Structures are given as C-alpha cells and as structure tokens.
Amino acid sequence: MIESSYRFFSLRFVELGIPMKQFRKFLTAIVVVVMLVVSVLFALQNKVLVPLDLLVYTFGPHSLALWVLVAFAFGGSLGMIVSSVILVRTRASLGVCRKQLDRAQQDLTKLRGTADAA
Image (tube, one colour):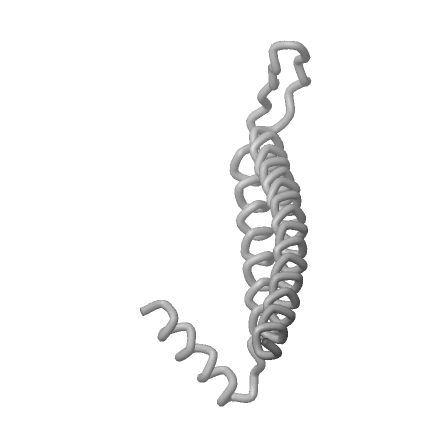
C-alpha cells in the first residue's frame, strides 16, 4: 500500500517535470521553516524564568523556552550522532560481506571449472 502510494506521488512529480531530489529538498526546507516559526512562537509564549538543577550543577534562571529548545536540539544532535555511528558500522559490515561474497563466487567459479575439466 505504501509502496504504491509512493510510486503514485513519484510518478506525478516526474510527470510534472519535478525530480524527486528537488522535491525532497523543497519539502525539507518547508519543514525547517515551519519548525523555526513554531520555535519562535513557543519562545514568545514562554518567557517564565526557570532555574535548571542537574544534581551536580545549577544553572541560573533562563526562559522556559530556552531550556526546552536546548533540550530538543541536544536530543536531536545526539540522535543524529548515534545513528551516524550505527550507519558507519553497518556500511563497514556490508563491505566485509561483499568481500566474502566475492571470494565465495571466485571459489565457486574455480570449482565449476575443475568439475567441467574432470
């Protein structure tokens, strides 16, 4: 179901002459602008000063919006770092698997060649 709807949308944009890569960039830009607008509105609505206590260190009072937006940005950055590490590990594992596959295919070719000769 999802695949067919994806094909539907990709075909429509291709028919209009808009490549999917440009559409994704456009959509990403819209999402970023909307998030910035929502962040500014959130900051304007939450001006209450709140101190932040982290058991070991206490930060001075700053606006609630600042603490929430910093936590959001920190969490997003941490998530991107963790997924980057996982992606690098996966790609390294893929490289090892491809090498093993190549060796196995070479061995198979050699074995088929010796079997045909016999």
